[in-house]
Amino acid sequence: MAGKVFFSVSMSLDGFSAPESMEGMLATPEQRDRNPRLKRWTAQWMELQAWIFPQRFFRQNLHLGDDGEEGRDNDIVRETFERTGASIMGKRMFDLGEQAWPEEAPFHTPVFVVTHQRRDPWERPGGTTFHFVNDGIHSALGQARDVAGDRDVRISGGSATILAYLNAGLVDEFSIALSPVLFGAGTRLFDGVDASRVALEPIRSEASSRATHLSYVVHSR
Image (cartoon, rainbow, N blue to C red; front, side, top):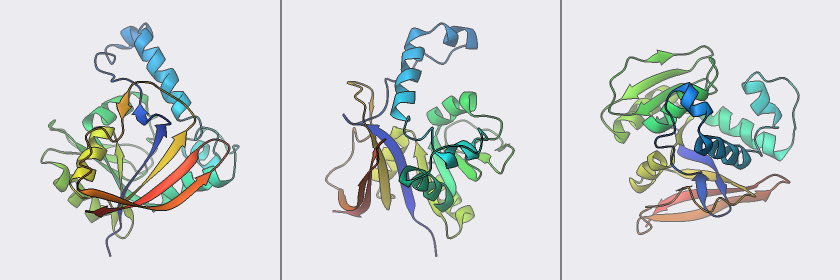
């Protein structure tokens, strides 16, 4: 039996899944080091994701050490990782990650990148191979399902890619880690959602000292 299609992201209290667009910020390394907008973006993103960095499973997955916090936040990180048999992401997320991920990328599954760029698969140590899909979101999902087996397919991001799958009726459920931060501007997670087609059923709401975790099943209207 095929697994579910889901996404799991952090979001600010005012509804942003990322700070402002990074358009024009990703130039040469020297330019990035001197770019105040990029420094501000990075600081905001770190604040948004602050709940996950201390978690033991997260630290072990990135080989940052065997220490870290245990508890419900850590359980949620581990459960999300363990249910994922393949991931899908957009080209912008890949471009940013290609510069930021360590050599052993943190997915440890096949990753399908929705893009117009033609490129051979990029294999990384630790079980992650990036496949570049040029014929749309349905093709990427079909390929991800083929390799995920009975495990789930995660739509990793960014927001535009998540929204494309959600509006196409291809998402079964999603989870949000609501971080106690305010951005005021940035990339809204649900900006452009087709609310006439999407109905939600809440299945989990639990708070920790670092974030509030919300989960929903997605139904068509």
